[in-house]
Length: 316
Ligand code: NAP
Image (cartoon, rainbow, N blue to C red; front, side, top):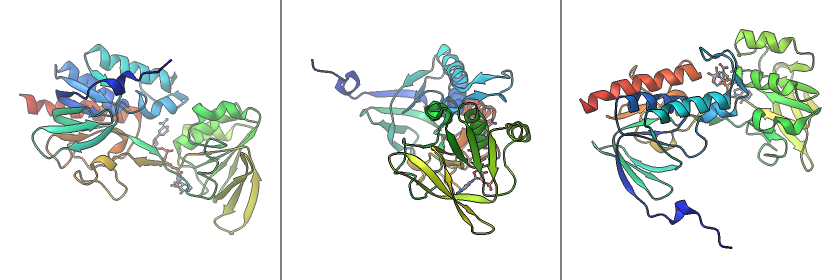
């Protein structure tokens, strides 16, 4: 029997909105909620999963009002809330944007073109890669950037986590409940993660730390069998047996689409003023893609609210 993909069969459409939001993470969903409540015709375009990066997080414990909630549950709540007040959603990837004129034009992978007076970039970020031999070769065969997605494959196995920030330590704690041993390899002798998270990690019996060290190679046969660890102080190389490597060494902003028109910093994070406006009139940026001092669900949500309230001035 022939299979039909309805979305690819349908004719490309042209639709006009007041506000188009690119990305359905906490920043985009919060902006959508506020914009929709202001009775603006609002569309969110999302290429992957509604909820963004938090759907890849096991538990969230620092979003006010929720002392313990899974990333997926919180993402679902954000999404339902935005939908309840009339946000339109489309599961489409933006491939081209013309943001220069009064009317912004947004083209997607389905051939649809949307226009709007205001665009909010809420495209978030992706995990940064280590860039060492074996990283690409062993992707999905022991190398992972998502403990919640892949952790269960490593029951009672030895694991390595690379990085010293909130993501590395929180996800290592999650993995320590599944694996027989988790070794955090960090390039300095102090973690960057929040103190409360560090305290918890230091108490876990099957959690080990290798300080002042980097992973220089990931090796094995059919799947990961070892990493080579280099002590950055002594230069000493050690072969460390492991079944998996989870890499959490920071974020790369998803600003490719607009980097030639919207100002960014040297790492590609979009520059905004305190109202989340970029240098281009009618274009805002919120959440992880923005240059900011803190990247949390609560700050992304706050960014979205500020942008959505400010953009009201285009519709007075
Ligand atoms: P991050 O805070 O930027 O930390 C990245 C870590 O990786 C740092 O420890 C850094 O070392 C290390 N690193 C960077 N490049 C490296 C390289 N090439 N080789 C080896 N190590 C390298 O990133 P993140 O942990 O992904 O967090 C991103 C943002 O999300 C942060 O603002 C974080 O606070 C936030 N976040 C919050 C929560 C929460 O509140 N529950 C959870 C997850 C993430 P140095 O320390 O030496 O720089």
